[in-house]
Image 1 (cartoon, rainbow, N blue to C red):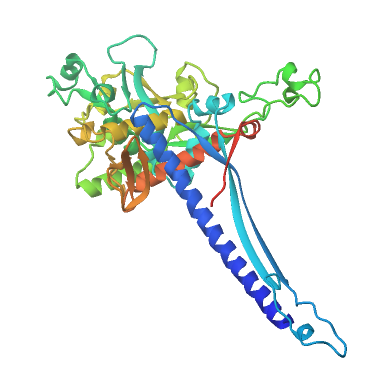
Image 2: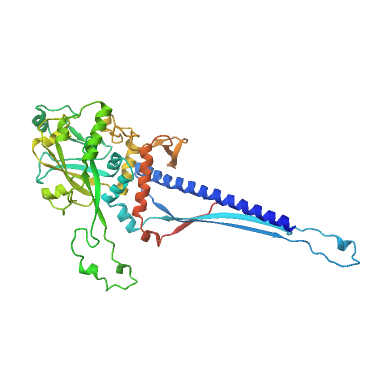
Length: 453
C-alpha cells in the first residue's frame, strides 16, 4: 500500500506540472489576444464616433493545489478472534487524491485625470525617436504621428503663400488649392485641376526624399532650458514628508526634435530612382533643409536661428526650414514653390495617442472612398515598403484573422497574412498606452475579477 500511494502521489505531481505549463501558455496567448482585441475595439469605436474605453490588467495570478490520503481499515490482533472480526473492508476514504488549479484576473479601467492628460497630449519627439530606433518604417511613423503640415513665410506675415494640409482621409482637408497666379509665376500657365493642389501625400514623399528623421539630446535635470530651478520647486519643505506634493515632479532628462539626415535622403532618392526607373530632377538635390541631424541646438525663438535649430514653437509642433538654391523647376509644386525666393518655414504638428485612434477609425470608415493613389491617405508612397497600406481592417471576415472583434453586430478582422503595417501599428499603440500609464493611475481604481471556470 505504501508503494502504491507513493506512485499515486508522483503521478498527481506530474499531472499538476503539465497543467501548470499548459495554463501558463494558455494565459499568455489569451492575454495577447485580449490586448490586441481591445485595440481593435477602440478603432472600431472611433470609426463609429463612439467613446473609447481603456482597460489594463492590474494583476494576473494562478494557483494549484494537490492533496492525497491513504489509510487502511481498523483491525484487531490477537488469538481467538471470531470470523466476523477477521473480515476487513476498505471504505471510501481509504485512498483519495485531488488536484486543482485556478487563476484570477484583475482588470482596471483607466479613467483618471493624469491618464487622460497624458493620452490627450501630443506625442513627444523622444518617443518618436525611440520608435524609429526600434526599426519601425519612417513613413509609418510620419503618417501615424503627423496631424498637420503648414508652410508659411519665415517673416510670419500673412501671405497667399501660406498653406496648411491635414493628415485626414477627406480630400478637402488633405489637399489645399494653390492660387492660379502662383502657377503662372512658376510655369507661365495654370495647372490642371489636380495639379494645382498640394496634398498630404506630396508632403509624405517630400519627407522621405529629404531625409526627415528625429534625434534626441540629454538635458539638465533642473530645467529643459538650462535655467536655474525656481526656489519654490527647489525647497518644498513647507509640505509634509508624507504629502504627495513633497516629491517634486521629475524633470525630463532628454528632449527630441525633427531633423534632416543627408544619408537617409541619399538612400531614399537612390531607391526611388531604382524602383521607378526615373531620374530625379537635380533641383531636388540642391535644396537645403534645417535643422540638419547632428547640428547645434539652440533655445526656441522666432528668428532664423531658432528655425535652423529646430526649436519647438508650441507643444507638439516644430518649425523646419527649406531653401532651394536653384531656379530649375521640377514640375512638383510642393518643391517648386520654394524657388520663388520666399523663405518658408514648415511646421509639423504631432498627434496625441487619442487622436491616433480617431485617425485609424477614419481610415476604417473611409479607406475605400479615395479615387486615386494621390488622394488615398491610406496608401504608402515608399516604393520599398513591404505593406502598401497604413491600416488593413476587413469587415465581415470571421476567419483567417490575426485578431478579430465583434462590435455593433459587425465583425472587424485584421488578416493574419499580410497587414504588416497594421500589426506594427498595434504594437506602437500598445507601447504608447504603457508609456502613458503611471503608477498613480493604478491606485484607487475599482477592480473586476474574472475567474475562469
